[in-house]
Length: 324
Image (cartoon, rainbow, N blue to C red; front, top):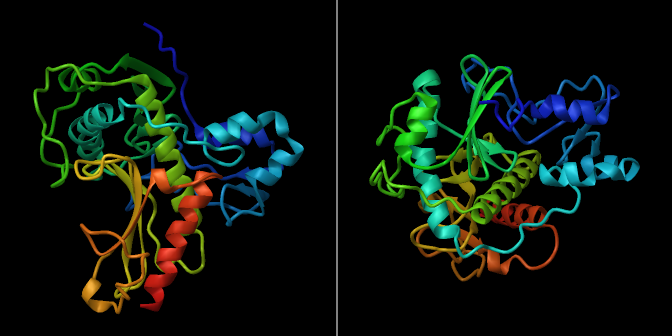
C-alpha cells in the first residue's frame, strides 16, 4: 500500500525553499547516512559558500530575518522550530500515558534498530516527533503523530502505532530490553498490549522536542559553551540534552517532557561533579532537589517565545556554573 508520507530530506527541502543563494541550517537529520564516529550528520554544520540562514547565532542571518522578505513561509519555518511564531500550546491531559508508551517504543524498538546497524542509539527531533538519524542504506525510522514511519532511500512505509510487537515486526527488528534502557526508563511491559498514543499528546511531544533542539542548538553555538556536545534525544531518559563545560564545570542541559517524579515538562541543568564546585546553595537558581542543579517547569515559562525562554535559562545556569 502506498505511504501517505513522502521521503523526507530536511536540508534539501530547506534549500528548495530559500533558493541557491543561501545555505540553510535546519534542526533535523538529513540523508545521506554518515559513517564517521557519530554515525549521524550534524544539522548545524555549514560550508559557508553562500549566505547561511540559521535558527541560532551561527548564521549570517537568522530564519526570522529571512522571513522579513519571505513572510509567506512563516508557517513552514515555525513548524520546524527554525523561527517565526513558535508556541508549545497547552499540555494535553493524555500526555503522561502517551509519553510513557512512546518512551517504551523509543527505548525498546526504535533506538535498538539503529544500534544494531551502527552501535549508536541516540535519537533526534524530527518534524512533528522524533526519530533516528539516517543510517545504513539511508534509512530513517521516525514517529510523527500516531504514525511509525520507515524510510529507506526514496521508499517510505508507515503504519499506525499499535503495540511494541507490531512495531518491531513492521520494522523487521527485535525488541531489545537492555541496550538503550536506563534506570528511569518505563518497564518493557506486555509487548502485545495496545499502546496509548493520543494524537494531541503526540503533537505536543513533537513541539516540545522541536523547542528543546532549537534552544540547545542556540546554546551550543555560543562561544561561552565550552566543549558542547551535539544535541541528542536519549531514548532511555526520553529527553533531548547536551553536555557543556570543562572537566570541573561540566553539566547536562536537557528538556524532559515529564517523568515518573515530575509529571509536567521541565528544563534542567545538572552538574556532573558538584564536589568540584563552590555553589552558593542560598541562590534560588539551584532549586533542584533530586540532583545538584536547576530546573524550570513549563508552568513557569511565562509568555513569549519558548525557545528564547529555554535558551536564557540554560545560559543563566551555564554562566553561574562557570563562576562557581
